[in-house]
Image (tube, rainbow, N blue to C red; front, top):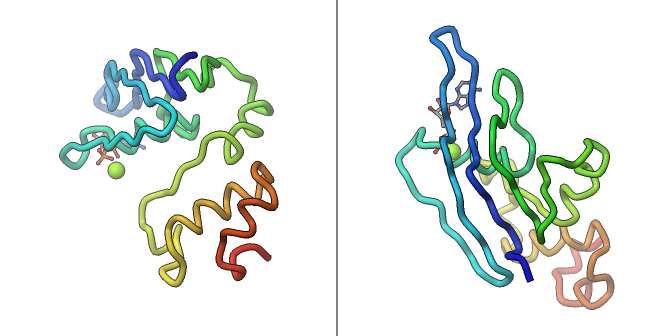
Length: 137
Ligand SMILES: Nc1ncnc2c1ncn2[C@@H]1O[C@H](COP(=O)(O)OP(=O)(O)O)[C@@H](O)[C@H]1O
Ligand SMILES: [Mg+2]
């Protein structure tokens, strides 16, 4: 079985007036099913751009210049846009920075992540029954 997520030699560059900025420069890691990985580093070291690259959400003048992002062995970077749109939200998702705009402090984080999974109908009734009913309408 391949890892749940495997990032191999990821490079993401931004074209700037002063030349190419190598925001992500050869990042590799694996995450197995059930595993939690914390990416830690000083501000500006490339954590957000790494995440956006995995989700294929880097906007020009940025671009993923090299590497592979394998989700259960499938390279997300090689998928056509329509297939990637179906993967995003259903098989891989991101909570964006500024938690107050992404998350509601009234509900537990677990329930809010679960409600996103429920919205794409992955686990159905079993999950619905475990959630705060205000999140399942
Ligand atoms: N749109 C952009 N244009 C140019 N440089 C960018 C852009 N977005 C991010 N960067 C640069 O990429 C590097 C990594 O940024 P980022 O991933 O946001 O860092 P952090 O680890 O704080 O999340 C930084 O040097 C940042 O200035
Ligand atoms: Mg960041």
